[in-house]
Amino acid sequence: MVEPYLDLNDRTAVCDFIESVLPYVPEKDRKPYEALIQAGREEDETVTQERLAEAAKNVGAITWPHRRALARFVESVGSELEWEAVVKTVRPSTATVLRKLRKDANATTLDGALADDDASILLKPDQEIEISMVRDEVRIDLYEDHKEALEPMIDDAAKELEAMKKRLKRLRERAVESTNTLQEASFDKLFELEDRIYFGGEAVPLEVLDADVQFEGGATVTEDVE
Image (cartoon, rainbow, N blue to C red; front, side, top):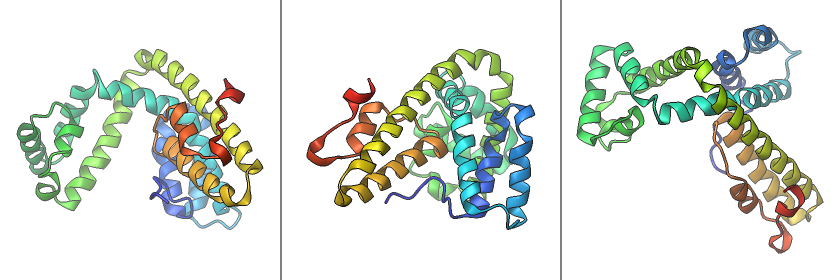
């Protein structure tokens, strides 16, 4: 299997993920998650790994439209805002390296600069961690600053998520009905797809969902869910 975005067996990683997406949850709804995170970090025996994993998937789904809308905003008109905020916030030495990478790569975005072949050479491990942490903070700030403008994109993303969830549900039903030889592979692929969507924040086209989960005779579920 492909390395997952989130290892659901890693208690710390699961708590970290839930905490990282809480800013996209309405403040009035955060307390149960905050209590769960605290109990999870304190190794409370009443908080099982299964409960943490279920909470992570739940909050991943709840926040997906918001995270996806923000990602699309940053990919377009917000890319320069992200760049300026990150360069302003990181240490001067890190900012210098980022500017060089951006210039050498003739890039216009932070992703473009980080994709340069020299990035892994010029950036030290602690700088890579610094950039990642600062970037998360910057994106939360951008979300708060542009939340109202993002509403139409959030609504569109919510519809997109609902379509993916319906397709995943039907695919899982078909997997249950499939032969033993196909069942395990189907469930593994469904786990991978859910990981990419709920934890990785990806938008997976419905036709890709259909193509990735194979059933006997090449059957699809498109007709059942249209």
